[in-house]
Length: 282
Ligand code: GDP
Ligand code: MG
Image 1 (cartoon, rainbow, N blue to C red):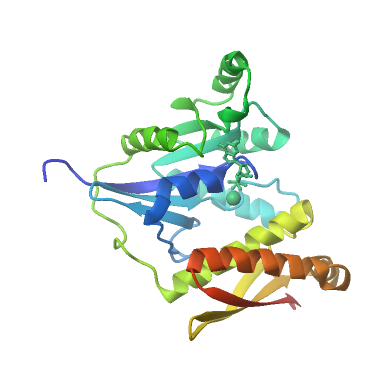
Image 2: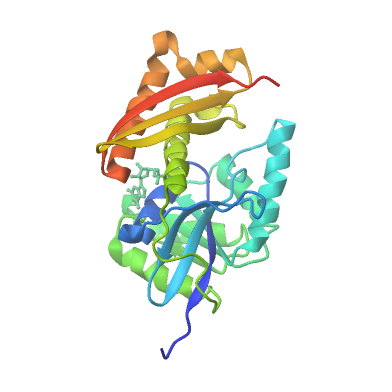
């Protein structure tokens, strides 16, 4: 080999709906590999790993940086999350084209504590019809934080993704591969199943979602090609349970249906999903 292998961690941050998942899916493409590090060693949730002959990039989430903390537990988690951000090699801060909201501002403030390079991804520029408006917006962004680069792009465009990937690599240190190339165990699938449920919960509940909600996959079994998955959504109060379940179970049913469809796509199997909501006895 004439070149050196590179390996490292990249955090993808930004408020909901800016296109983080879309970006990630396109960055890891078919090389999707999900895993989860032990919580004792890191605060990161691994979203996906892209391993090629030349590099391994581990994309991570920084739980807590996405939401304003009113509750003390959230504040504590946010501190942990901001601390953990120092461990990554690069941060991708994603924003939605020309939009700038209070939540963007909040995430941006968090980034002030970050010592590693940050790239601002100005996503969804395909939505901007008058491109001349973009330049003043980029200037506005540049004043917000010391970004290494500001990249207007569209997470849906392959060319843009390839350009971004070339740029990303330059921030990744020379290092040995951290994870095996094809790691995908039963435990990892459980982790991902839980993440899918969490995403659907968030979509359904928005700000109503109690932040510290945990999801436990109780069962994950391949029954002759049918995946039987059962999961418990833990909440803290009886009232939260009612909210998650919804009128006549409507909300939970929706969460379940949407989660099942995503799981079937991801696992390429029919899925039978059972969801329960339980109140944690503290
Ligand atoms: P996340 O909440 O930050 O993970 O955002 P998602 O990846 O779920 O994307 C939110 C919405 O924006 C979805 O409907 C995406 O299809 C859409 N989206 C993402 N990237 C682009 C883009 O480059 N252009 C356009 N027009 N829409 C996009
Ligand atoms: Mg997402």
